[in-house]
Length: 453
Image (tube, rainbow, N blue to C red):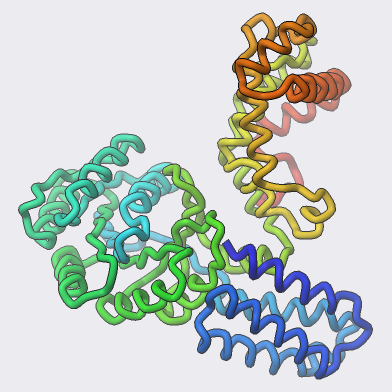
């Protein structure tokens, strides 16, 4: 998300970095490019106008004129205004109400409400240790009820079964009674959506809200929906007292500007962002970090948190112990590391959080990187167990067989073996004190000096 906006703004800002002075002409040129970038990214025109005016007022003020590095000061202003545009800093999602706390999800059909309900339940269970009950009131689409029931089973949450012939508000009311009697901490209510906004849909979602007295009414919006998202946000904002926004499909190849517009129109903060199809792919939204990513500054803090959350520390310790004992690094270990990279969202998910300068310097292609990882895992899977344990026995005929079995060329197998030998050499060089220090850090979670330690 925001890829096009990031690329365009980065080019504009490159022209300002290192400027000895900022003039009104410099600012006008930069703001003209920023305006075009925002409009191309699908940001609503009124939002663009107010944003550009706010930046202009500050950019021509003493804050920039008196700075020793005016170009950097202008970038700082742009960053601060983007943060404000996305809701400001400090918004966090807390369940303060008396349990069971009711979370109501509303939005158009196809926005991803049902999947988001499961993602949110998983996050609350794992992060906040809450007992969660899921309920679907989408009686028009029975498959939605079945989908949520299956997702609940996958994440270990309870599901409230109901007949599709029952009125949506009655289902919600019965689910709330079940949540109370079952001593659940949270009830998540998934509602029906339409391809368009209509009076019947708005009346239904208001009835459901009245039946359960939701503590949080979250508008779920597809980041790729364009201006339709703006119209839907306006309609749902008028029908419900929304408390927050959840962006879905934020990992897609989208302009993403509608997300900025929705925040302005509803007046409510973006609280979560869906970054993939899996149930763990839901992240708390941080306006400051997202503004940094849009301006090509990266988000290293989120990257560190993601590594800490998703990397298998037991597996890392096992590998470290193995190398310390001199048992060596084999293809099974390499496959394990590649699978951990996939678990974190692949190369693309990591690149998205790296500063733009680092990405340009490495000339890394996310798509190429992800394809390469999948190809390497396929090659290793085509080896026999003996070959994985002892790659040194892989001769020419074995290489041809492995290539045929994994659907690649022999040179791809050769390339992987060469890379493996280099990694094996590095592992051998880490024996001793350096690796023991690494293992000590793993036992303690994060090494000293990392954010949050």
